[in-house]
Image 1: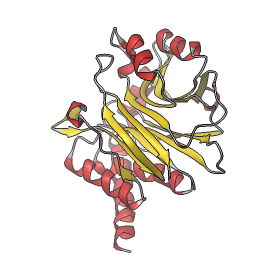
Image 2: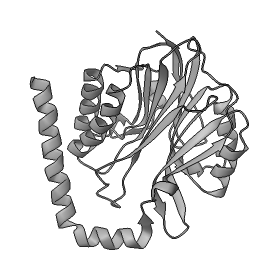
Image 3: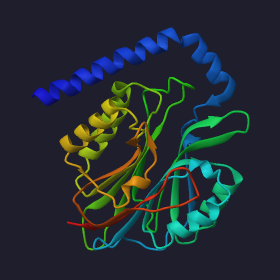
Length: 286
């Protein structure tokens, strides 16, 4: 009961902070949003690319990559995406952007189906940015969840994308949860985004991989994310070469948590294709 009360308190306090921020910055926020970004409508929010090569994932071996791609800005991005994605069954990607380069890469894949969920659209170039979840199996369902909170700097929302995939010989399915967490916010506002995502996770009865860029650069944020995941029954994935992870103020930003999976290998790969280093893991359904 004490933990439940703590979560209720977090939601109440976060709601107060969000309301105060909205009221105090209402005029500036409205003007800023009208000038440089827009929220896509329901028809524009989701885009799908490529074609899946398999009907079901092998529950005995699922190769996963989690990577903040830095919007494909690095010159080596295309090469590194192809190298890192080779042989992977599931890709959980943050900072995807619908420019010519990235959309062409996603569209050209003949063995991977990609779902892109837009957080917002840059007005000047009519270019959407968000997260992308991909797999060698077509998702049986997906859900895009835009954050209720917004960045203090920029006033933009962030996105969580859920996708479920069939598993060979099983009635349950693998759920992937792809998060790009709010960054320039209080830990309470981040907590709302995490709790909203965990409501969807808790309603899913099969195995789960919850990964991405959690922007846990403060002690409070890091502690809360780990507390919430543990309470929801998700286990932290321990990665070899964790020192390679992107850090801010000495704290890691990228994480993976799982439920109903046994991890046989997990490593932080090295790349010059983005500022974040990709998290690679091999999972088996328990």
